[in-house]
Length: 138
Image 1 (cartoon, one colour):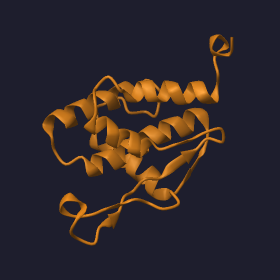
Image 2 (image 1 turned 120 degrees about the vertical axis):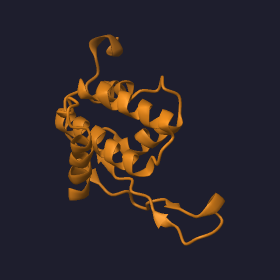
Image 3 (image 1 turned 30 degrees about the vertical axis):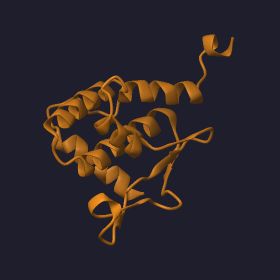
């Protein structure tokens, strides 16, 4: 899954000057960048793949796991899904043993959805599933 690392690096390189160091704290920067992208209403497909790979790499480096391809990648078609041959959508998943997550799909949803649904909250939910807190066990 060399594509994942390459896309994550491309995202970090495109935002030089930002503290994108694969730390959990850097996810706040990703949220800010995604908010700006959503407001600009530009092309989100390449940004979603790159930012999603970066988010996944943060998760993998902090919590472990292994990237793998989705069994059957969804296909996006032309206008309203009616015309055109379509092309596979890049949607690798991160297998963490206990759960499998899809950071690229999460970023796609983040670009379409409400700003309250942050990448930081996503990371915390994944972390809580992997490493339950004492108060969650009571």
